[in-house]
Length: 448
Image (cartoon, rainbow, N blue to C red; front, top):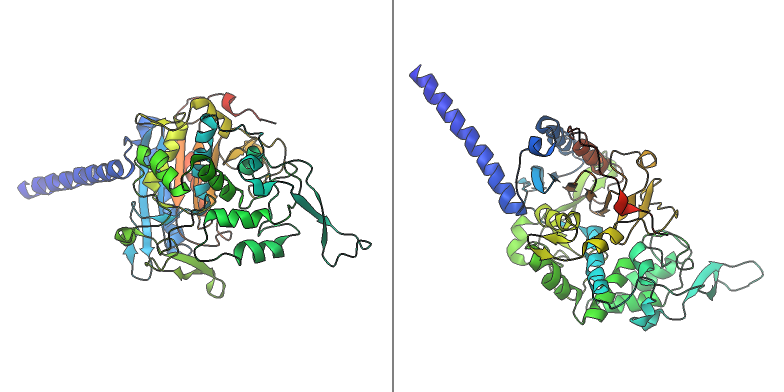
């Protein structure tokens, strides 16, 4: 009996220690209050399904490892890591792993530009040529007819209207890109292959300005490098590099200590390897880039600061940024934006233009996709929910109605053969068990 009591005591101490250590880890990682799921209307048991599903992807060899986080009403209630940060060395994935977040850079760069909007430097309908004259007198490429005899598949006509700040923030400027459009070969040759080792984002934007547009500004939604132009506008208006602006005006105030354009070598021990699917092996992962000093996210020169996709970060840093947005522009006494600007950024700003990358039911705000119709979107969520993802299979969403944030990070490119991002969102939302009625989405009225 005495031995049994001792064993029970030890078990209780170990259990208490595990809970304490888990909470301490989440507290130190996110810097946000930590709570039990039941305190914020979630089921801890149902949240446990996230780990099971993520582990399934690891066991199948589809991803190396995953970090997931769920926060509701300002409290982190789920923070877990499964699998490996580096599958070759069997280094375990940890919640403080640093990932290439790629296009999840775009909301941060967009917020930076909107901070300058709040200072009175421009209006959304102002032409960007006011600050970037290379975007004056633009031409649009349109299909050539047999009678044109140009030797090219297109001819050029004057743009119907100038590119505005709103156009670059919503991906409706018409820029040439790698995805679609008649000017893809010219984009590859001029913008991508024309890049030199010491180029800055200013150099790249000037090359982009030499290319004809795919359509008249405002006529369509087309994903591309528009947020590089957003970042360049931040530089020209502020007189700082995008790196300097983000560090001083966003990362330092929000205590985002692990978010960088170029990872310091001292943090390489937390940098994730990146993988690609091996078609010859059932799409199981194979190494694409090891987490070494030779990564382009580490090595010098440190001069190219891409607002479209240049940052590395952690789940903990990223949740701080979007808790600020969910709070209406403020976190822990640091105000980044005013509440009305947050509402403007997260409203649909493109009317009924189709967002082909997200699919039906989605619109687009100033740096974010926005759900307009959950039925058409065909995924659990709320009208007014906003978010985006990155090319290396990172993903986040913010649901103002449910006061909820979800973040998932792994490192696989491409990832279109798996549904891990969408499934994570379903798994997080199915854990909502409170009876609270969602708030009316009054802050997300479509802006036309």
